[in-house]
Length: 85
Image (cartoon, rainbow, N blue to C red; front, side, top):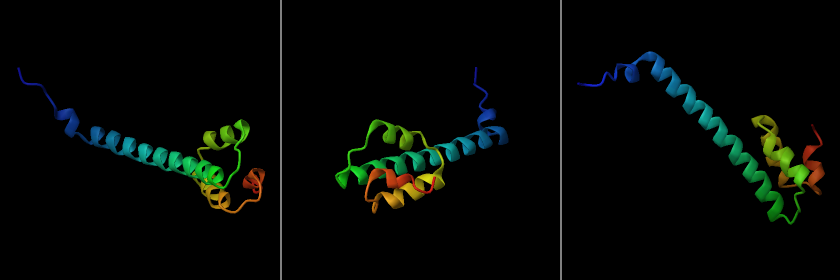
């Protein structure tokens, strides 16, 4: 007995795949920025305390993360990362 695979070719299934791809892409950007911030700070010799690490890793706002990533290369101390928040 052949299996009906028509659902996988339907508009609903395509929409679900597209939404999943977009969510995955955004999640990847978020994780990439978080990792970038932490690596830059650590490579500059900063000790990233747990509360700061938690704040960075729990952020899901790509705009905020972009600002933190940019500032991570120039801040004089880790707390300066959050000056505009």
